[in-house]
Amino acid sequence: MAYLLMFVTLLHLITLAMQFIATMEKSWWVWDGLENSDLWYNCRFDNFTESWLCTSSKETDWLHAVQILMVISVVFSSISFLVFLGQLFTMSKGGLFYFTGLCQVFAGLTAFCAALIYTLHNKEILQDSRELTSGHFGYCFILAWVCVPLLLCSGLIYVHLRKKE
Image (cartoon, rainbow, N blue to C red; front, side):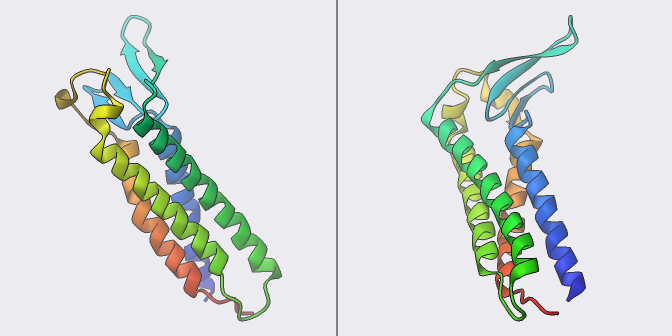
C-alpha cells in the first residue's frame, strides 16, 4: 500500500508540473522553430538581437475559454493535492479520498475541454497569425493532451484508495 501511495503522489506531482508547463510555456503552435504561439503570447525569434519578441495574443472567445479551462485545471489539481495531504494526516483509518479524486477528475475534464477546444478551433484562435499550414502543434499542446488520461487515472485511483495504518 505504501508503494501505491508513493506512486499516486508522484503521479499527481508529475501531472501538476506538466499542467503548469502546458499552461504557462510558449509552444502551443509552432512555425519553423522561429515563431510560436501559446495561450498568452505570439512570439518571434529575432536573429539580430537573439531574443524572443512577444506580443499579446489576439483576444478571442475560444482563446479565453482555453485559458480559463487550463487555469481551472491547474487550480483544481493543486487543490486536490493539498486536500490529499490534509486528508492523509487527518482522515480516520479506512477512509476514502473521494474529494481528492473528484477534484482530480474535474481537473482532467477541464484540461480535456481546453485541449479539445484548441484542437477544433485553432484557426479562429490563431486567425491573425501566419499561415497555419506551415505550422504544427507544439509540445505544450501535446503535454495538455498527455495530462488528460493521467489526471483521470489518478482521480480514479484516489477514489479507490483507502487510508490504512
